[in-house]
Each structure stands twice: as C-alpha cells, then as structure tokens.
Image (tube, rainbow, N blue to C red; front, side):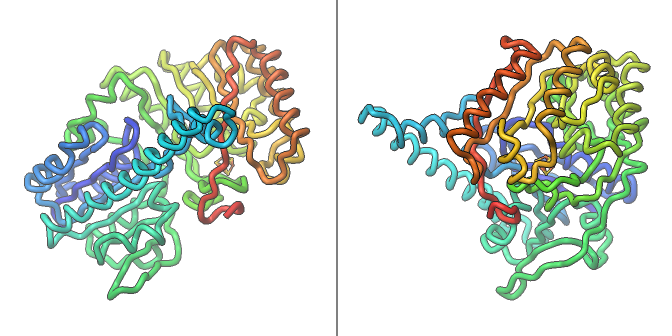
Length: 424
Ligand code: SF4
C-alpha cells in the first residue's frame, strides 16, 4: 500500500494521540507510505463530509483507518445536564420540571442515536468515494460495541480491538492478520481473529516534525493539553471498566527516558505546557513505582515547567511519590473514589483500601499540592444502600478536611453497564 488516511471521528476536542502513534509506527517501518491524519472534531458538523471527500481525493488512500473514541454521552461532565435531567424526571415534585426534563431527555436520546448514525455514515462515505480502499476501524468506543457496530459498517471493514499498530502495519504490508484481535463481516457473517500482538513500547519515540507534517490540524492543540502514553494495560478488575478488556491486564512500560523525551519535544517544538498521561492508570501498582519515579525525576532534571495529570490511584501514592508529583508539576486531579463504603468498593473489585486513599491525599497535602481534586462518586453500584451513601458523604468530608474544602469537588457519576464487563 502506498497511502494511508486516518480519520479521527468527532468527539470532544482531544488530541488524537492514538492516530499519531499509529502514523509514527508505520512511518518508522514503511517511510515510503504517504500518510495523513484528519481530525473531524475540529471541523463544524455541516462541513465534515466535505472535508472527508476533499481529503480522500487529495490523499487517494489505499487504507483508511477510523478511530472512534467516544460513544457515551450520558455523563455529567462539562456542563452535560443529562444526569440532572434524569433526577428531575424521576424525582422533581414540579410537573413543569418533569415535562422539561422529559423533553430534554428525548433530545439527548435523539442526539445520541444521530451521533452514532453520523459516524457510521462517514465510513459509508469513504466506501463510496474510495471503493478500492481497505477500511479499518478501532478506538475505545468501537472496541466496546464492536459486535453491534461491525454489522452496521460496510462489508469488509476490519474492526480492531485493543491496540492496532501491528494490525495496521500488516495491512500496509499486505500480510494476513493472523494473531491479531479483530472483527469483520464476510459474506454476511461476522468473523473474529483471536490473539493479540502487543506493540513493543521499548522504542516508541514519536518523530514530532513528521507528525506535524502529516497532521496539519495539530496547531489547534499546541496550547492545549497533549496526551502522552507511558504504559499500556491495567491489572485491576473493576466491575464496570473496559480498560482491561481493551488494553489487556499485563502492564507494558515505555522507557521513562522516551516518555520524557516525548514531553520535552512538544514543550520545545510546539510550546506545549499541559500534558495528560493517557495510561489507564499512571501508577498501576508498586511495580510501576520505578518508572513513575524516573519520569518525574527526569521532568524535574530537564527543568520542564509543565502541568501534568492523568488517572492516578491515590491509594498508591507514597510520601516520596507525592513530593515528586508536586515538584514535577502535577495539576488538578480526578480521584475515582467511587464510593465511601469499603464494602461497596470490594463488591466492585476495585482493589484498594479507603484508608490508603486518605493516606495518599495526606501525602499530597504534606508535599504542598495546591491543585483541585475532583472526587468521582458512582452512586448506583449494585450494593449501595442509604447507609453506604452516607459513608460516601463522610468520605468527601474526610478528603476535604485533608486537602481543603475549597479544592475538593465531589462529582456524581452513574455506572454505565457496558459489554465485556462484570456489570453486564
Ligand atoms: S483501575 Fe481504573 S482502568 Fe483499571 S480496571 Fe479499575 S477503573 Fe479500569
């Protein structure tokens, strides 16, 4: 194959780090292949089909890889009022509020299904304008609902579950996808490929000037937050979570030197100051301490004045790690406490003790942490009772007493039931 087009399907504006890693991986092994990344989130909805058409005509791709990141909209993040509407619909004593909430709920449902239909239509559009191109699709949203989505995509589309570097390279080189984890439709039947090849992360060092050349829209992210991956996989077993299914349970580490080199080149070449570790967990366990420590020590040694964050198991933060976190520029944190009841946490197989989480908060406070902490609670766990909900209120008070009430913000979530999780 000679040319490859990546299309990042629209979601909230977020740096398409997965596409950049794929493009970099292919470029290092097949430098003769022309590549291009198209980020639809940056294009107004009414102009996306035109952008796909123009880019495809320009690139004339032999392979088009779609990345579908988000599919859930029912979250209370960033002003999304769907949870509030649900509360009003079920519990408000005011009939007008109930009516308004039900209309808003219908609108949310319409937007949800329309969004899925639109994304599927983008794939069909490529099938129409590039009839000879092969099509692949991956990303978290696709991985979660692969069996349902593959039936709605053009026959021959290859869906990738989990990481896709090797699978994409095999397609480019015309090799069979043996040993890859994929799903496809052939002659009206769904076929799946067993196995999973894990990409070696030892030499994952992004060639940033190359990425800038194949991703002209990157300029929109220079002053924003850039995603950096330091490891893949999560060893935990939280009942509601898809990460172990998508990324695997064995943790693969990227050398700390390459992680910080990645941050440093964005810092120096693009002027980026904010970074997000895209790992399922930045501190996956005690085995990750040496790598996390080295990453933070290198950020400090290189005098990179950045603000960073990521998903962090607060229960694993030690006094030494907290000091390094603060010195290396940790910013606001989201702490997935989930519940203030140890019994509920155990029933969800969360794998941490609340007392250790409070210890982690204490170490952060002692280290001089001044950021905000969003405490995420999921109030609909199967074993929640009124008493456990009261425990959650108490847990907020404990964390607020440690870190300061003005900096701790409780956020309510509801656990979604997703395929391939224990809650299904
Ligand atoms: S620790 Fe986080 S990423 Fe890992 S399984 Fe639990 S919720 Fe998922």
